[in-house]
Image (tube, rainbow, N blue to C red; front, side, top):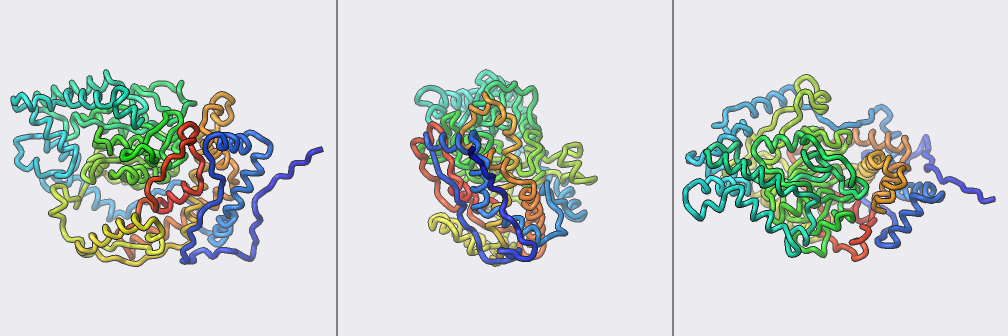
Length: 561
């Protein structure tokens, strides 16, 4: 008879550790895992997820990449509690400062929500000065001009602009067919919103500078009238949403036109960016290359000029990576900063904007809104609640008039910073030099056990993927519709033991406290590249099946933790 021997976790010694917690030696190493596309990926996925050998092989993969080291490190901090939700509460003094900044009069440029609504008056001589590099303001100024009576300017109403935008997307030669950045657009609804916005401008009553501006939303965030498919063919039958996520409704209330949902990698499980179910998207600069993900379509839509702001989620670089690969701006906000409901159970996800410029990123950030006192994040934060949004000290009028950065401390971990493609490092060093020229000081910093904390982050997010796709993996029909890489990722996450998951959470607490103290005592900001590499080419076989490439994925996430 055949006897199957299960390969379990590596034992951890009570007395010795192969790695010392707090060691500042730069220890970033590549992970080991098979790389596959096409038929080989399908075979690999079948063996790892559908055969009796699967659990054994998955355990071998995890062991070969040193998961036991996380337990070794965790045993060195027996009295450090695990950290599940990485939410940092401000001191009473800091909280009061933010509260005050958000409630100052708009003339002091503190109450940004009032500012977004107030600078819509074309008679305001100051209006042209605000957000001078913003594409949102370009839309707003064009819409204001549409009421001038000039025949040429009449082509700049929200309705006319959205008609041209939709026409550019449609057809065999349209942008959508080439780049595949949208999952769904309700053309009738978009034009209805545009007509309502045009009437408000005609009456001289736009709701804000966002009135009539197209906004797109990642396909895992709830939008009224749309299915939320998570980038998966297994979700084709999900019900149409009856309400907006708070991050969406806040923008809608300011008059923004919600264009539709954008393509993402299935379930957000890979930062490569390609979704096999949607056969895209592709990099905005060259369709032979990956767009980055998982908020891939959101970044491509911005880079192509379809919309100046999109809403994304980020748990392991899903806003930052596609923004960088497509040459736009992206902000993964602090955990719990922006209130949202979709995927609220994650301990990783942050909601934030991908935008054409830094000005637009700032507009999107404050417009999405912070979590209210009754929101889960507000309740978790405590009696004072999450501080309201503001842009205190943000250069609202022009970066050219930016105040000196004297006194600002920029932390740079040199070994980490320089561990990337020379072209990437050179470009990022130029930016650090620019900060220095404005008066900032560069402070050398180091972070211990960085490679192992990276692994702890990867393990935590893989377990969340495993839970998110648990029912689909267990359903014969739904499971067969999942991408091969998604099945492998979810299966690996389900193979992680409770001890390893808890060890990762203890290390998260340790790292969280280290970073907090670093910001409290040593630096005001830490500068790193977003990615260590330029966008990789998409393998031909991956166009049909996707790609499983853990070494590349983890390398892409080098600066994300």
